[in-house]
Image 1: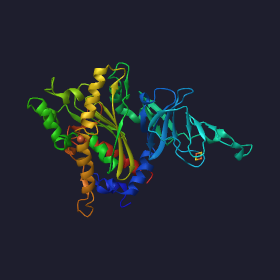
Image 2 (image 1 turned 135 degrees about the vertical axis):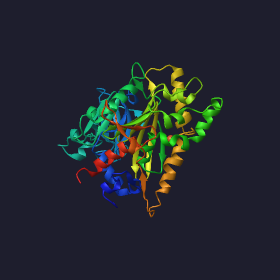
Image 3 (image 1 turned 135 degrees about the horizontal axis):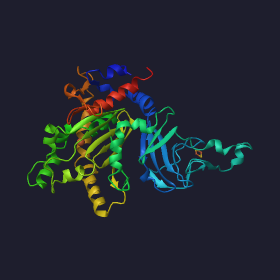
Image 4 (image 1 turned 90 degrees about the horizontal axis):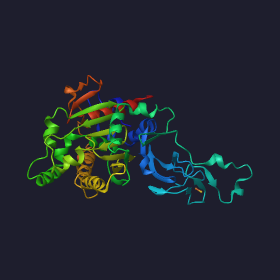
Length: 405
Ligand code: FES
Ligand SMILES: [Fe+2]
């Protein structure tokens, strides 16, 4: 590694380009951050029935999130056969009472118990199957249906870790009278670039009117030539604000859009359900009515899963509206994700190749001079387009990277 974490991010928020491109820093992130904190792996509504499962990653380790077909309990287990290491589950989602390894046929229950070993006389009399189940990760807890898991025994209780982010997760969970569901499941985007670029971008109102200019033009056309109030609000609306929720979490609150009315599809689509963007450290985000799970795979490869959030049991019209809203901006041929992948991830990754530049750092100090403390909560707040959320994220990143040093 080219530098110690303290110098990677200076106290006046110059962020070294190395944190986005150095493979050794990536390995250290997996060890110091993703192996030592709670990591979101899925929502209970994705695995509602016994035998339902999905695959996920924690600290670049492949895991299975499974609901037992026996007792309905949720297990998070390494996706690795105890015989000679093959992945036992190949699908991203599915339902099965058993995971059967395709290499030599060892078979595990949906809770990971080893229940079948072909020709087991080959292991002699004392072979104890109960000692060779799939290995469970250290901790699993849910908050309002959001499932988090940890490779470490030493994490605080999940509610303490979520802290100030909980009120926002509560709000999201209450958009439906009976909760929410991710029943359309997600779609996956992969890009060549560092995972932190996606987290920083998810809660960045500053970029919107530039990176997504063509989308704003489309909205204007649809709205009889009237500009979306988004841009003006980002610039001048003091009730729009970024808040450092501590523990690395952050929110951008945008409330009801001023001037929004029937026909402004952008305002109505995102503003009336969940009027904020939320980052839950290190890799979960909410962008309006969408959940986004960021999966770091290497220093320059990132997977992102995007899920539309439905009120549980929503009628078809509501589901369709949310789905269309999701597709039009985030879908494979939508107007938003493609902008971000090109501009915010690919071009940044290419620019950061200029390592000989005398300013090989990103400037993350926007709004530092006007950051204030909310007298009610004691939390740091800033204006809409300030980089308070990015500093909340990177500040916790730096703390965890330095721990034990
Ligand atoms: S590696 Fe799984 S059964 Fe042999
Ligand atoms: Fe964007």
